[in-house]
Image 1 (tube, helix red, strand yellow):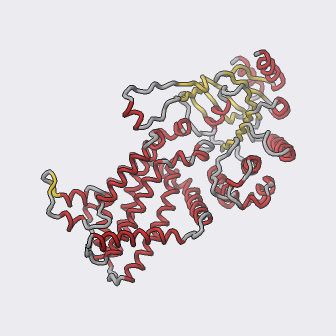
Image 2 (spheres, chains in turn green, red; image 1 turned 135 degrees about the vertical axis):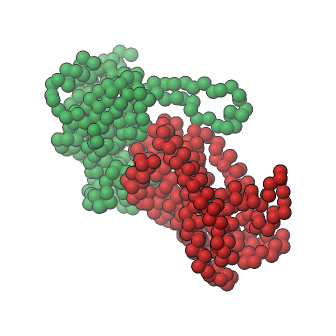
Image 3 (cartoon, rainbow over the protein chains, first blue to last red; image 1 turned 180 degrees about the vertical axis):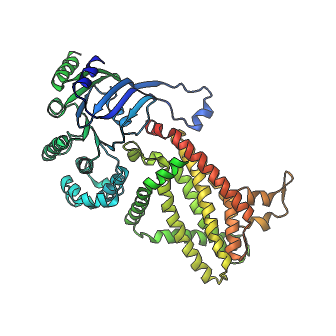
Amino acid sequence: MILKKKYLNKKDNKIAITIKNLTITYKTIKKFSIKKNLLRFKKSKLDTFTAIDDVSYDVEAGKIIGIIGKNGSGKSTLLRAIAGIFSPDSGIIDLHDNTVSLLSIGVGFQRKLTGIENIYLNGLLLGFTESEIKEKMNDIIEFADIGDFIYKPVQTYSSGMYSKLAFAITSILETDIILIDEVLSVGDAEFQKKSYDRMKELITAEHRTVLIVSHNASTIKELCDEVIWLHDGKIKEIGEPGAVMDNYLKFMGRK
Amino acid sequence: MIRFFINIKKYYKYALYQAKAELKAEVANSYLNWIWWILDPLFFMIIYSFVVQVVFGNSQKYFPVFVFTALTCWDFFNRMISGSVKLVVNNRTVVTKVYIPKYILLLSKSFTYLFKYFISFVLLLILMLFFKVPFTWSMLWAIPITFVLYVVSFGIASILMHFGVYVDDLANVTNIVLRFLFYLSGIFYDIKSRLESKKFCGLNLSYVLLRYNPIANIIYEMRVTLLDGGTPSIKWLVAWFIMGIILTIIGVNTIHEYENSYAKVI
């Protein structure tokens, strides 16, 4: 918390995302079937699991924030909550009217529809108009670089193509806030380089805020302005990418 | 409810595009393509006509048209109900990746069903010509009746959609209920003339079955207007319309309240 304050005082920038006392829990047995309930009168016990535990943080507009932490530390949950996919159990997430898109492995594609149709659907969901999407269609197709597959149903794609198209959509149809969950490491070497460059391009855009979840130390060090280290749903450390990353790696290696 | 309309305005383009793309995909992935949309109801009409006219010896006037009218309405209702239960789970890829008001999924689905309904309806009109059913002005009643059918189906479907997320085997239950309803709704017989004199617990059975079951009521009114050139019971149509609105409000409010935890469950 002390670290956070220090960073806030440093620059008087506009805040893009406000996270306040955010807590998110999962109830592991929430689904039930009528059959099971009829056969077993005992009420099934609900196990709750706290994925995010009282996290507060403000993201300044135009910054690139890296999020690190071991598996299950709540990184993806945090991104999904910011994307509005589910609401916090308590606490506040305020996006200050910014548009947001989440990029993660296996993006929201409809498997039976073609790449083109999925571009439209994703664009419409992100709040773009049909003409805006049409305008950028060629850029997306070109960037995705998957050839004629763009006219074929998404279910015929390889997992690499899947991610390439997804990244192309999110990076060309630019929203104010971009959330990236562990995707920079997919695609072939050429595409990795391209998406990495594109990421850098997005960084230079002044008002674009980016949150990246990654396990890749060099990506984090090179791209991010600041790193959040999540551990068991809590913020363990915030600060300079180099320092936090070193501490994190030391911590992970020690175990 | 205001939020409902704002969202509809914001997302209807998405819903429409999604529906179009889905219909297109359906066509592209089958051998006989769109012909299935016509063959499907047509064959069921032939089957029921055979069973009822030949096996049971019923001599209802314009029987094929009589059955086809009911099947047109029933198919829409049936698709809406059985489609809604697994809707959120089936759209897992979208639901877990981006925020979308969940009833937009239902809205989009309903557009595809509505499209099939209209194809079926055009077919019905052709059948009416073929069997020389007289065309009258009261056929225009089909429009408000269709509207009531849509609202009632949407209301029930939106509620089922919510519970379908949490209850794993709800689909089994709805299947049984739908089968039951299918036989009770007078799709291949006339409830009124068949059960006119039957009493059940002191109640007039035909009246109960016909009026308290929305789909039977709608099918009955549709036949009255299309086949007999009569006027439907406006009282019951309005009653079911209001009921549909109430169900929709309940469904939409429930979805608003819980939709953000759907992604955690599926």
